[in-house]
Length: 105
Image (cartoon, rainbow, N blue to C red; front, top):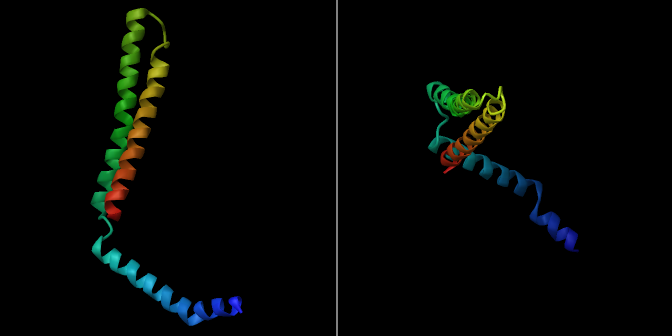
């Protein structure tokens, strides 16, 4: 008996109506928040590139400077390069998620 009621509530017509309502809701949200333009997307790619490259280069420059002062070869350069790259990727990841969250709202 319980299984029979469940089938009545979720008949094919109900599922079709629900799918149509969901599609209409997605279409309305898409009209409210349009897709970014090509120029905007290219700007975002540029920002992400610089967000990764700049900390990497700063880490490398700081490492080379410390290596020259202490005469240590690549003792400081290698870890500071990796640390700068990690910081850059983390920063880019945070920026992408912040942008994605703003676009959804």
